[in-house]
Image 1 (tube, helix red, strand yellow):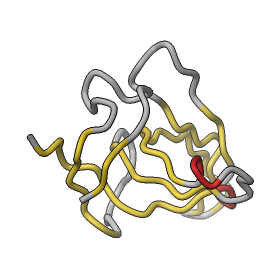
Image 2 (cartoon, one colour):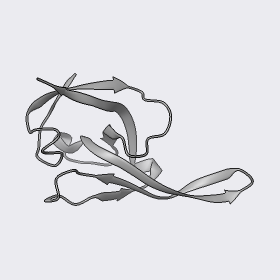
Image 3 (cartoon, helix red, strand yellow):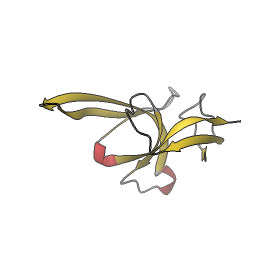
Image 4 (cartoon, one colour):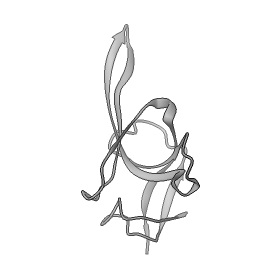
Length: 100
């Protein structure tokens, strides 16, 4: 359980709301809302973020693939998505719902 601060995921996740997450999600991350730990951030308040995960993959050999693009997307159109590399973040948890 964690408080989400900020407006980037509104209206689905209101600023200051209490939310339920599942640690260490398994399977595809495509389209899921995730709690992300950002690496290389100097601002401790922005070390963690909640965003929708999307990626584009390309085949790079026999049953091998690599990420062509990884994007962390806000739901609120007032905010811009981020393109990140696999080394720039870690998935901490999957968002399940707002606790009312």
